[in-house]
Length: 515
Ligand code: 3SK
Image (cartoon, rainbow, N blue to C red; front, side):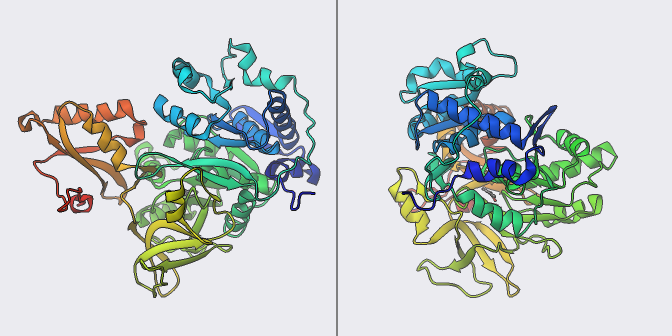
């Protein structure tokens, strides 16, 4: 028989039903609420419906859905039968989805209607895709593909003994690389349990009466834990927000739904602080016992201001898609503003030099970590696997030092990647887009830090005809990128220059452009 039988959908959904939480609200999303019992039924229906169309263990399913019950049902319905869901960003360009569908060879695509309306013209370019399941708010006219029609006829009983083990692939997430082609990060059935225990239990002390609200979307590794398997792990409630998390919408949701744990990223905390100053009223955050930030380093000024406004700590931490969730974090009562805190119990960390030797306190080097939530590897990418995973240790790609008290201090990336609003952005992808513009001869993109210490992409551009340089052209170059890439990637600043710093072999020295 199969040793170590384990299924994450059974653990995070069905076990709540078995343990007496069946009538508890698992998901609150706008007006909709789903109990654990209802979630389990719909998850089983989705799993059965997949089996009905011939899906098998290890088949991949791409998900591009807003935060919603349908996201959770599709995710765990797939995991339950051993199929592998791959949540992806909902705001990308057709060529990005073409890449995901073809690189993963997903057989099923669960997608919201407006996006499919845009993508269906390119259907011929997705040779592996066999079934498209549409989630529609409007009641889609394409009956046979409608999500709710798809699951309606299926049974809500699904045998729990489906033969997955803790080592089986459970889901993938795509992580952007500096070459611009995202890597498929493979996570195992047991990864969520490990990240849940290490961070949500050890750091947040999450309990069944907690209500979790993540402004970061479920398709990010950060949001997936915050808004789904952290609350489910302890039988708590997840609040899901379908819309864009503007400061106004986020405050409105907090005041209405009264979460006890709130998760955001530094740019959102900054925007929320500005919003409060603008409206001249302090929103009621008294339900929130702890706030969390990750994605990029949280400016110390935000931690202090937030405490003044709302009398609650923001715990800053750092994680990665490959580690699945946060592995360095501040802890309640021991917040060290500006630092990323200490190692999360359950992980090990060390700072090493180029030869892999451990460095002493206060010396800057590469942060490497180990722990059970770390991915089993990248899909079909031997070279990147060699660089990232060395035995049990994973290279985070971040430069750090650890002070005498054990706190970790972030010193930048080991590569040229930028984090903008918590999302990785490849300078090379922006550069290749700008290079397609008829007026652009050469270009280099770097991260520019603003007064609050947050990063945005800035492009240094050499024009074919120098005299064309103008504010108007700069604006039209920004729009040019916005039209071709996901909108968050456009350069917020453009500077026209006459020469780029280069090595003797002609490589652009981006670090020399950083101010
Ligand atoms: O960016 C981060 O710090 C992060 C945190 C948790 C999970 C995933 C990521 C990328």
